[in-house]
Amino acid sequence: MGLLSQRVERSEMEPGDHIYTWRAGYTYSHHGIYVGGSKVVHFTRKREAGGAGLDSAIAVSSLLLSRGSDECPTFPDCGFQLPDSGVVLTCVDCFLGGGALHRFEYGVPAAAFLAKVRGGTSTTARADPGDAAVRRAMHLLRHGFGDYDVFENNCEDFALYCKTGLLLLPAAAAGGGVGIGRSGQAAAALGVPLAALFSTPFKLVAAGPLGMAAVTAGVYCAGRYVTDIGVRTDVVKVEVKDLSAHLGWRRARAQEKKKKQQQEEAPAAAKSLLPLKRKRETCV
Image (cartoon, rainbow, N blue to C red; front, side):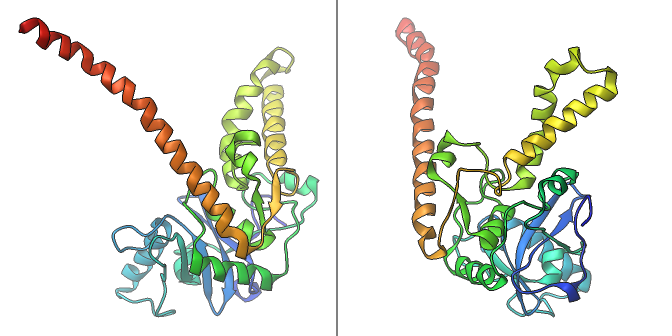
């Protein structure tokens, strides 16, 4: 168990493993479920203009260009993705895109979880058997996983659901809970600025820069821990066959939010046109 992440060899992978690879110099990681046969099911943005999703398109195209080929030699159907869906099936090579292979850890003790420097590498939650993860991933490949959202519904959220079956309760997703998805990576990204903000009042009691750094690190770790799906109380087990109802609620909420935003913008636009109307009336 590494402090940064758990690197593994391909020979160690088993169907149902939650795997990931770091990209852009360890800036972020991309997650997926290994389903066997050198294939990975993962979640990215929906297909745009006939191309694969953003992450999968970058990985597949970069690998094929390096080989001087228009077709993946490992898996003829590599990049399979239904229209209006962000769930994609690729080979392991294209998923990694030249990066190293890591395996996400489940059921880690609280102390080990807090010792991890980066979020999005482990959880205290227990994983379901590998065949359950494969079944969920293949079902979502055919039916989708809703709209991609960096903070509330990303590739790590997809893999976490496949491994645990846990989703946010509607009340939590609407703002009654923690306010972010299950992704430890998103929690860590939000945790750094929040840790700096909330630790500012402790400057009066912290003994110099080192003390302040220790307080900030403590707030950061605590924030990561309370947003972990193994600790949160605003998650519920959802069967994959019932997932469409949950995703339908999310889609309706997004449409309602967009409509409300448009209604709020309309009066402002009308108000900005009012001086022009008065000017025309004066000229007449």
